[in-house]
Length: 444
Image (cartoon, rainbow, N blue to C red; front, side):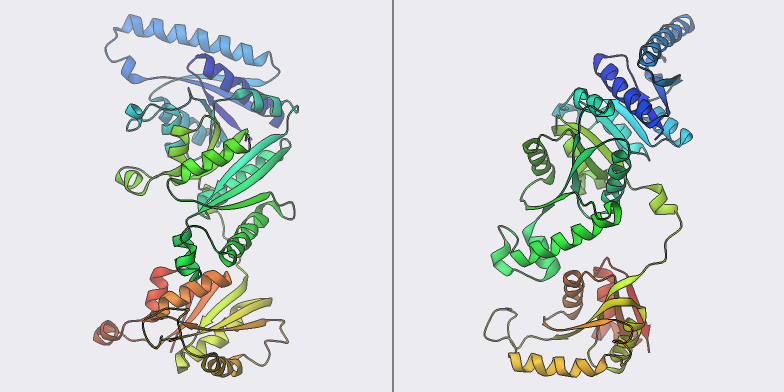
């Protein structure tokens, strides 16, 4: 683990540098200690004073590096000119570092929210994780092997959250830790996404939704931690997610909060919000902000295996043809879910008496059963059949895919185009626009 640490020679920076040095020693690597002389401080100074300032800072940096070397860490010091967050992010990129360590005074005053601190700007800009040190004692004790670190991960099923899990797994390779992964769900959103719950799920998730969320969270964590799963928590929450995460982390007396960051900029950051930014502003804890890993974005993709494939058919020739492709895409031992969507008889109320009868749904399920290929059982592929009532088939298919946890959605397409497509619409196009999951379209 290559580490870059920024210092401004304050007491808080000294504590952060002490943590960085202990981590570098633990990882048996060299710590690069960086001080950035902001160009704004030099613009109005005469050359003689600039030279004197350079020499003064160089001596301070040497003294700080010497102090850290006395702890047994290998240190390289570097005096740079430029904006601190740009210097740190650039140094980390050039060195292909794994972590930037900076200090923070604690909560940021609201008057500075628009400008941001060096810590926040670094986390916003850097392509590698940024550790903001506020309470150095627990981190220092962990790096020395004297403390089992309590790590709280705020998770949201985003690529940056997956990168955060990867980073935590790498950290545990250096020392022991107790990990809790928490997902704060908003019940109305989960109700719509899974198509379960209705009005009963406005205050909190119904048990079926909780079970599905736990399944999805377990699968994501199992990819990183294997059988040694961390403690998983799914909580319902209204209001700002960052406030709920801070409250939960404080209740657990977490030593370290780890969050993925989307690194939104400009108006997108203010319109869409940023949980990591909110936590940096409000929490008094040690925080690691993890951007989406470049290795995940640019590295070679592994060959996907489709354990769960969902296929929807309206009993048309293109729809039925897609069923065979779905079974062909499913891996051996996997499962295929065959879905058929019917329109509600009256105003759409899933639990109303106007819903189609059980006999009608059973009859439609019996029509789906013969579509299962004869050799599916021989390949160990299991089948699930579902008849769904919904006024919008594309919504129903997306919700069924979320409930099923589909690795792939398979749909047939009649190939409509032009005016016909505009008049009749396209269920396939609707699914492509709505679902974040891979979609395989089988054309006629």
